[in-house]
Amino acid sequence: MSFAGKVAIVTGAGQGIGKGIALHLAKLGANIAIIELNMETAGSVAKEIQGLGRKAITVHCDVANFDDTKKMAAQVISDLGGIDILVNNAGYVKPEQSLFIQEDVPYWEKVIGVCYKGVLYTTRAVLDHMIAKNYGKIVSIASDAGRVGQRGQAVYSGAKGGVIAFSKALAQEVARYNINVNCVSPGATWGPGMETMPKDMQEKIAKSYLFRRLAQPADHANAVAFLASDESNYITGQTISVSSGYTMI
Image (cartoon, rainbow, N blue to C red; front, side, top):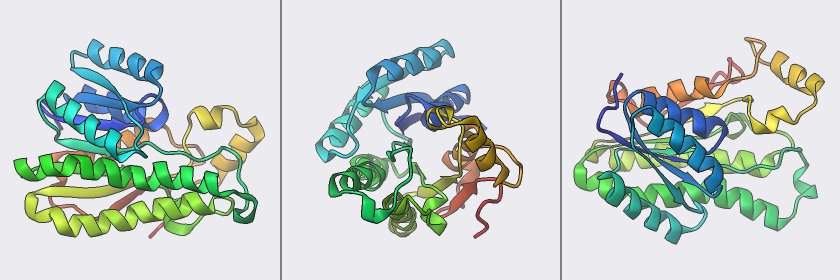
């Protein structure tokens, strides 16, 4: 599998799953646009990618702001020469769970803004370019919460479920332009959110998965790379759960 000469946008690539995806695609030959609000972490990832001999740029962008995403796409095209792959990874959910009736509207709006509207805005920002070149790979990071629902994360579940449904519909609209649209659906993954969790809670969550461990960012990066590659040219509108059999749909 090679991405030599390809340009990939990865939103939320400064840490966790997004960082893992960006580094993996770079190792396979892609040049990477790191889309972040935290420019310190973005810069650190860019240096790692450049150390691999690939081009990497950082773009400050709020994916929940459509104007920001349009400017971001234009900058990537200008600086890296085009866009072949979009990985919608940026997300937001508070670490502690809460019932829907305990949450307020500003929290709902932030979750929906980043997790759902962010996918719409960023996808729309790159689509004209992909259509013009008659090629594109769009991979959105969903969640098993969006497939089966997660108690204590009702709005997040709804937003991620929306991403899955949107991707299925969009896949039908853009297949004529040789654009593939798919999702990767993670389960619980080791990263900044998990690191702060009590050890006994980490172990309890891990035991709920068939392989008795939390996912690593690399597990998701491998799935994203496949869906972003030409080896998946006949796959579109699909959601792959990378969650140790947590959901079997």
